Length: 265
Length: 212
Image 1: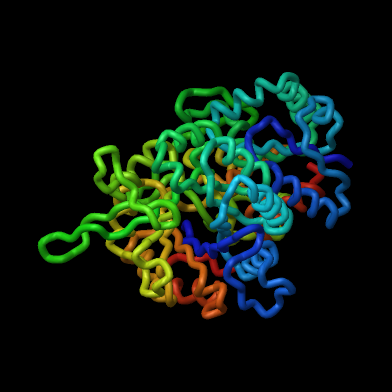
Image 2: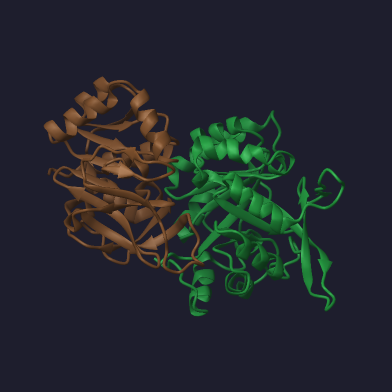
């Protein structure tokens, strides 16, 4: 049986992680490669590096990080942040990434996903969608979600100036060739209040490719809900692992106890 | 001893190279190189054919590297050197793939590469992530690997073999997914051993010391 994945995400700026990691045996807590090795040993199912200050000038540091990580961690690695073209995908894959994540560029030009998937295969093309609730039905239940870009600061608008619907956009991305959707609840990110579950469920039900839930995890029950209520195939979290609140093992055991198939070895 | 990982522009070989090099060092299995040259294929003691992406594109890329297939066929079929295919490199062993269009494989192991169609329609395709192996048949490359060990998969098509004896392992995804195929001196893995942590590294080490 396929297992639900737990993916720790490291925010990287200029080759260093932005948040420190509370692992006892790290020599350099700000070195992403050291953190990656620790998560590898801890049984994480995949790793994600997000270059939060991606610019043309500092691209090289991310390639170097990917290369050094791939030399030491024999597990899947996704890299995102500032990815704009099939050439960026190629450079990151050659450096050692297994999957590459698009965000703002896919909103500006959805065909960049088709061009990248045709060339490298859908299996390595992830689209990161940052979305917030923007509408409710008559009973007050959320039923409309909009896309945001540029780290969640900028609402994405279509050519008529209307918000781009997150569910429709996810379907479009699948149609263009995305192999996976990394869905971040922007109204929950950093709140530790749990995933935006109606959003997660709406996207999971709308696409056939796997959805990774992200944004807002504060405790282990939130991870469970992302799967059982949100329908996610994987859960991504940063703070709860980096700050040492919970280990990967504790998270997996908690999810397994809730009946979710997990890889415990 | 020389192991050659064949590079025909089909994706990232960095982690495969590092994983094979690390296990070669641990098992005294000699050198591991990545090469695009037919002459390196001809002088290799062991051969690894990786592959990521769509089958027709991979098959075309391989054909575009003139002389590679001929050198590979000579080494594996005529000389009987140990061979490992990974992901699309494993599917390439088939008679034909039906991904997008019908594309001929090597026909070294009879069978078809077909779209994954889980009996449960809510299951996602691609089949992406960690699944537990069910060993169908003991094999030296699977020494120390047991039913229940996990491997990392990412694919939408899989290899349905004609002869059930040539399926060495599978996994369950609301139906059987072929995980490992093999006969004589050749073995193929649908999952990525170089991404499958301890179990994957174990299979790589076993392959590097395998004398079929």
